[in-house]
Image 1 (cartoon, rainbow, N blue to C red):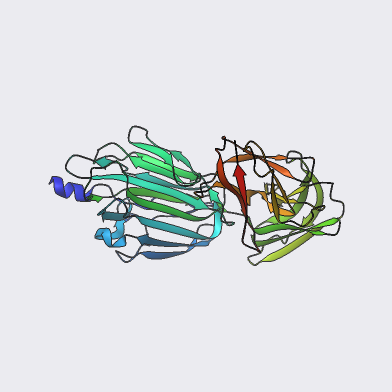
Image 2 (cartoon, helix red, strand yellow):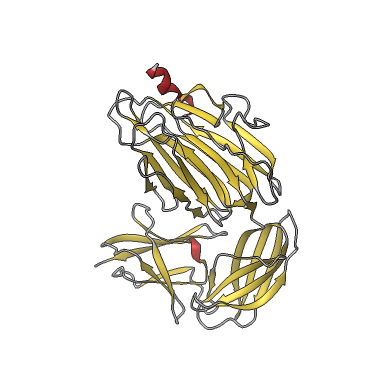
Length: 402
């Protein structure tokens, strides 16, 4: 009886939530066997497409990859609480990943996790779930996690946007709910990696599972911005941007700053309003200010709500160098960067192992900006890098000598 119970404990349930009605701007996927329509078919399928989900309707594609040969009990299949993935892992290196891709970025994406625990009595495993998500530009978005600290603990993954939930209590009846929520962020892709943590005895692992319940979102992103770039034209700056989707959009306000603190509106471009095709816009700044000019878009909907784009930096007086880092060698306390066109969110500081180092940015009165690492840099080799849309990744080596 105990062995049978262990096989059924800890199920991987995806997306089970119940709404009597669905108001405008909401979406959910209910994969429980209590749903009016069970959408995950047939049992054991590793790919699914959910069409016309939510209001306005979007398409969600799901795929399960990794050590899928370790599934048992004919899973993935629906249970009364959701989609069941029962696994018999053979080592800590075996992991399955569940990927959800949205045809349009969705806001306030949320889901729950049940049954995160471990068993070190006669069984051998520790549930470990890594959660990561990305917006339509490919930038990582960190979730807010609500969990029971008496059952699980929370750590960071290999990148700061990845959050990891691990079980430490042996309780086959554990049903405390942990939730992951991406508030006010447009999520294009969600990945959930499930395996066993390191806090287990040596030797092969045993049957384990968890529950994920309630994949919901509040709306799709009204305006999906594909890119925003700036380019010098003599002593002027040309801004170009494109959208993939527009819903109820009114106009774009073009804003400029020289200190990253105070942004002033310098122009207004009327948007299409409603569109499901790619649209391109441009704006010419006839009078950029001396030094670096920082630009962003304020997208305003017809109902008055608004959202800001990422910030880009353009230097009309640049000598044309794509990226210059100085002084080099540096003492690691402040690192100056000079460039001609840069998306600030794409700028990274990494060590020789490729690990990102968090930093603040400070606008300078000269034709440069300063990176201020949040922790002291040890003597060694580092890299300042950013990803461009046209020339790939640009990298400059930085030597730190303390």
